[in-house]
Image 1: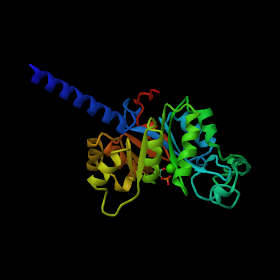
Image 2: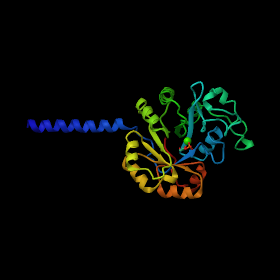
Image 3: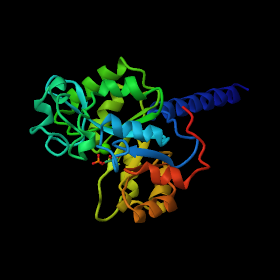
Image 4: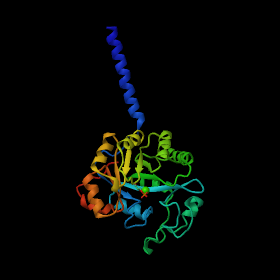
Length: 280
Ligand code: G3P
Ligand code: CA
């Protein structure tokens, strides 16, 4: 009788430990409602100036499920929504983003480079994204140009602790940054972006990333149904990026990942009229 009791106690402890470990490993995700989610890359960046409010509003009007955008640190330790390390390509200014304060960045014209009709578009501050979109749509936030992992992670954690963040995912190509961020703020789901790899992405790489990341996001040129299965077998999700032409669109739809990141959300919304709206 005593032996049976001991065995029962040991089994119960083991089951508890297993569930606690699973819980601590990664954050829960919000994407079980349908797939693929249509994720507007830098907003609807094919037709609007990327990472501006006109691009984000267009994506909302198109009923995209998620906004993807890029953030990086400014001179005054704020986060600005801009992709490149410099302002040269997408504004009328010149120089490194980290050498501008957020107020200086907001003086720049971030629309005219795309078309004169977008003159006056501004670089959004990260905080505006929460004020304008967080209650309306999910946000896939990529952290760019991380020159100091600990500093950027601490500032981002500090920022997010003061903001409601029910429907956000933090992702980066810098997996070391993602690990540090995840340790500091484990309740926010994180993703790793995988660069193009000549020999494909190995099962071992997927297993390593899945030990802390809920999303493993490969480039379309590196994507396949087999890779999707490998990612799903690790209980992770997969967003494929970045769809910009018809051939890529067909390939992405055939793979049917959890999410498709595209400059042209309008293509997918039109294709999939029966899509249920994503529930938040
Ligand atoms: O979300 C994937 C994609 O945004 C990564 O590449 O260079 O467009 O930020 P990039
Ligand atoms: Ca990005």
